[in-house]
Image 1 (cartoon, rainbow, N blue to C red):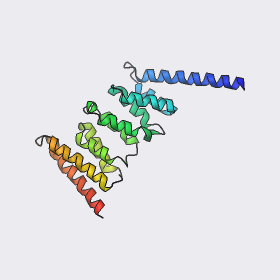
Image 2 (image 1 turned 90 degrees about the vertical axis):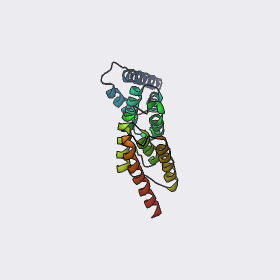
Image 3 (image 1 turned 135 degrees about the vertical axis):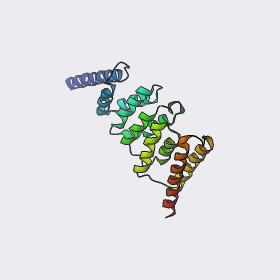
Image 4 (image 1 turned 180 degrees about the vertical axis):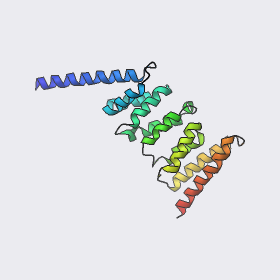
Length: 189
């Protein structure tokens, strides 16, 4: 029994050392293949790895946040990270460079996140908005009257606080109204 505990203890120590090395390489700015280490961390899929990736995701380094989002999006328990990923995407400081983070949403179940995706469509940068529109067009969402009210609230905020002379305002205006009208028709049935 003591020999087993000793071997198990050594295994845990070796594994923890390996995880630390993977995280160091993941966050190394000189590492050209950092995404490979994100993928290796995702395969480990432990609680420790998930918590450390969530911490990196919330950190202020957008490159590391992207790599953490990549790893989280490939983990078995990825849905647990979705709300935090959306918080990071919606954070105003990331608004102009969050397209890569939005791209990682494709690996998540978004059926309960219509309002979040609609917000990204309205307020995101070009890439984020384009990806969000693709999700809006292809995902199946659970919609309720409450969801509709929230979407309309964000639409009103966008339409009252945007410049109507900007090129994408007109396109988003037409598309957002179509989306809202489709939801109203669905709910009326």
